Image (cartoon, rainbow, N blue to C red; front, side, top):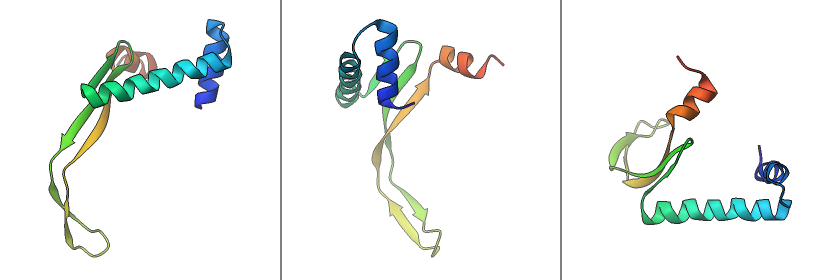
Length: 93
């Protein structure tokens, strides 16, 4: 599903224009980015948690040549789905 399809669905369900729905989605995206930069995590009830995670520097191997290379430390983003989301999508086990 694309962003424009999400905006159209949201506009239809809520009863607003597509332009207003797109603006709302853009603001939510900006909010997620701002909170991840400032706090490092964002919890959305029923959806999950977005987190920044720092990885350590490590040694890797070039698969083509077998040469060892140094992989620098970096920050990655991680999303952990909420239990209710997993249960509704995958079913209870």
